[in-house]
Length: 632
Image (cartoon, rainbow, N blue to C red; front, side):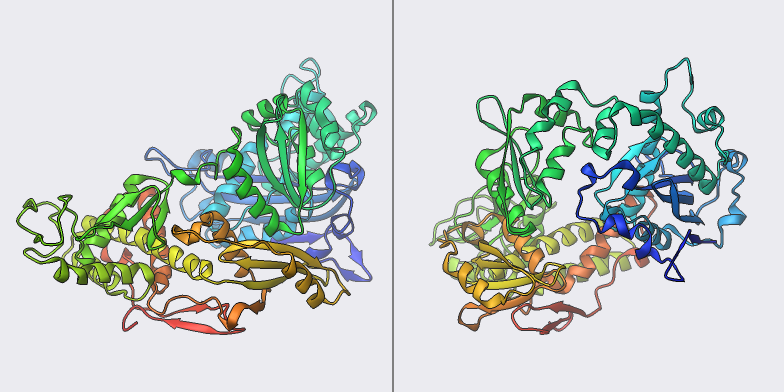
């Protein structure tokens, strides 16, 4: 049974989710500078079927059976959240003995798919609340795993662990153990822990308040002070907090520089000062980040108009500097592509740098690229043999005959006859012909009908990967082909974030504040927009991640197309792989489920393909494209 209790009234009416903590969460004061008495804490406790948040090595992940949470600020309880959760499995006897929660008690409870969104709404972690737990690694680990399972975005929450705080505040003589029950007895809290989620969360609230009271006379007055007081913050980190003092509370990109001015790390932030301050308070537990902060001698920044500009600038700086402490996006030239080779009898080759835009990718591994190349060659009739053939040659005589994975191309054909296969492959990449995908999906169905489930599953997985890569490339190429597109997104305060996009790249960015006519601002940023020169390469030479970031921003709800060059809007090809996007997502889910439970795959688990999807086109307001696999 779900129980959400707002502890108070506003104007004679009961508080709702939005009211819980609204006064502090709507404040302009950054959390790191907010006094602890004004900080909203959400104290959470979970009960589970075991200790494994994630499965692996043949073991099944455990599941949440109960969530309890208390929202407090300034010593006042703002609300409580408590519910049993159906783990969709039997509860082990030792867990029943520990918690008293039986399988019968949870069989009619809501599942985590229903509970987690309500908990996140109650917690308001995106609004600045701090998530607190006793042994936070356990509770947050289960919540993050549940969010991943439910395909829910996990907020960038600030987390405080009362176990670590207690270890820092209390001596071992005073408290040999920092278990919740031991601390509850030591502090004589009103609610003793019972291994039930809400009771334990209430007990943790009192423990938290007592610990915070003890450090108040040691100069700990804000959340940043409390984080730096924890034992994982080194003296060097504390000393370097001054590096963030001159940064603005604005969105942008920050660069940590080393002793010789070299770029160590690049990141983005909605609030530059708040984000950079976190590196000096222990909010980021990664060991390499502590090492980076130790080496850093300065922090530079580039203030940006909005998050899109910050994200684009970050990607460009990562590609330009390859900072040693960043892990992603540093070497875009190391990715792999599948492209038609330039020869009389073209092949689908795996290459680093295609010389034209008709390519599929990028892939992070050459093995994945090779799998996709073989699959598409199989259903388009492109040869896979590596013999180099001249224009006057015939394909076939020099092609080795093998029983396993034979060359898909027809034998004894001339270059002119072979050109039909090349055109099919090119049309598939461009989104003009989807017959190869229809053939692949039909083959999956045939294999399943003949009970060749393993073969069907392997072909399904490879086809799903090919669909995803084709569809991504077709969307991005359509955007990269546009000479110019100007778009606006609401900023949440009555104004607009503006962007000028040319050939899939951000050429200019700006803001039209509330009350300011937007079109003069559009004209101003358009006049100063960057000139984009295209190249003979995928997406005209644009960074793939930049074009993908721009595309995601354009598809965000509320974004409007302000102006396009020559009246040409952004639209996807009629026979694009987008018709199978939903099928590919279902196939990937089936693959993940099969990885966790490696049982034989019945044909009912192989995703069907007979459906219709609706794809939004941003070329015209409210325009839609109807796509159907059969008959498209």
